[in-house]
Image (tube, rainbow, N blue to C red; front, side, top):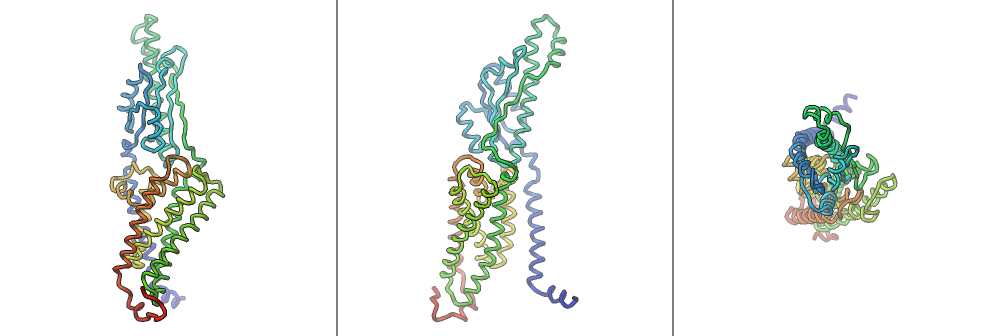
Length: 388
């Protein structure tokens, strides 16, 4: 036992394995603790849109909400434009004040409803926060409606101002919330799919890249030229992206997953972002060899935090919001939400992935061009193989 322990402990692979476990702990702890720090202090970055169609109380309600809510309030005149901004996630919730709101709220026996629309094709935290904001808005407007309407009604009874105020405060609820959800998500299992496919895909291609790099070094030792190896690697990468995405999408839909965009659109998009993941993760291996796995661990953690799969990107620190623009996971999550739950077309996300994919491919080719052939490969060069 002692000899076995000593033999295993001296192996470089054992030391590397322990170091990798420590690095995962270090990197994930630092990135997640700094990335999610102070999110509750940035709620002013969230935006709700208000379409005011009530000429009597509407302006006063809007002013009251601007002063009292922890989120930004944006006034919108066109209901169609407001709905478009909600669909494209430019605003997190839409509030409509109907034309007859003040008349119903002021009636002696009437109630009025504020209309809220929340887009569920967002991180789950958005839905929960907006539901809380809707309740806060309803309560605030309800108090004002009771005081305003009741004072008008009771003042006609020749009561003193103090009596009027006392009775007004004891009246029942006048304002209710009518909440509509667009692009509904069918269960927590579906809500977690964007995060799951990013995590599973990137971890999978990291391991694939590590093994493919070892195969690449073995092929170099056999005397196979670098451009032949580069071309073969790209063919394998493309084939793997297509096959892995096909199996992944089939499993998601087969286990009850939803797909607003349809099977083939989701398959094509997942193949695209898996290929982008492959090329980005393998770029570090091409540049730094097996030490490139360190960069991939860091990149995995950064992407999980900044992609918007779990928490809204609007609430992240500025550094994480900025770097998310160059990470493929950001566009993978955006497009996946559109195709899974509903939303705008996924063309913007696809273009972002194509740009990252092309950049990684060009950098990989440049690395192959300037990297000197290994001494081992040159020593065992075979006359039967074309080196270039």
